[in-house]
Amino acid sequence: MTQEWLNRMALTWALRHRQKYARGLLDTYGSATEVLKFVPNVVDSAVMRRAEQEAQFVEQHGIGMYYYQDANYPYRLSQCVDSPLILYSKGQMNVNPKHAVSVVGTRTPSERGKDWCRKMVLELAEKVPDITIISGLAYGIDVVAHMAALEAGVPTLIIPAHGLDRIYPAVHRNVAVASLQHGGILTEYMHGVEPERYHFVARNRIVAGLADAVVVVESKERGGSLITAQMAQDYNRDVFALPGRHNDATAMGCNRLIQQHRAHLITCADDLVKAMRWEVEEKKACQTTMMTWLEDLSPAQKILYEKLCETEDGWHINQLVIETQMPYQEVATELMVMEVNGLVKGLPGGMWRAGER
Image (cartoon, rainbow, N blue to C red; front, side, top):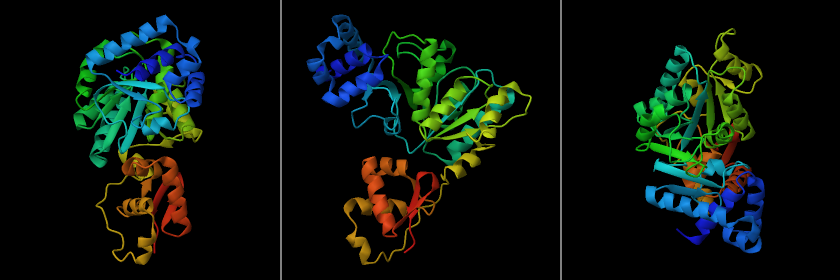
């Protein structure tokens, strides 16, 4: 492990309760090594020993790592101002899937809620085969969503509130182990960190930030699911909620989200697929006579235009970034230039499609 990575872990651990300050230092000096050079008192010998212990754990257990300044950091999460500086992973995962949905809900769901959640995930997997299902492995809806994803054969990401040396709750260990072959576990916490109450609230921002959409399946008037929904809104993610009877305790949170226009009403996977414009269709070629104006496009514009021509329904700008591996700002700028020229058309919700020429 490089000294820079060791310094990253030490700095993140030292300022784990002051991440905004840590991010400011890193943005100012460019790297953890430079921060420690100019602000050496921020990390003491005990913190460095803790980082060295984590480095040993990472190497012994084949742990993957993502740093917010690196290119491999989850793209969706990088858009969130309070995203973790470091993420630790275990499994076979793609942190930038084409489509990602987080499923959250009460720890004490009804049989209706559990059945609906399973059916919804199975239907999503059928309609959107490249979907990734994200949740927190908690009792109730979380584990139902993970199990349904494994049943459907689509990746599932577990976001725990602790380090990678344990599984909580332990009764869900088999689900966690199964996810390692098709998805995995992703956390901001070093090994040895226990599932404290405030860690669950903090991890919810990862659950919300990693997804294109968040589905709330049964929630009481208060709870972690509603916190996740609020975070998703703050991150400009789409939120969906399953309605229920007005006098059902487990439906009150979802009903309130819908009533206050903070979530789309969802009754089946189709509702989400259509709202997100994820309908699976055969690729259609755009007009083969692209005329000479196509030759005048820049290389980046050609890539974007050809991608938009693959479907009449268009692409979300986040999907274009992932598919083309181009920086977000470059994609946004090129799309606006092409829109002025009538080559593409911007749609509500960050969607874009090829224009009619």
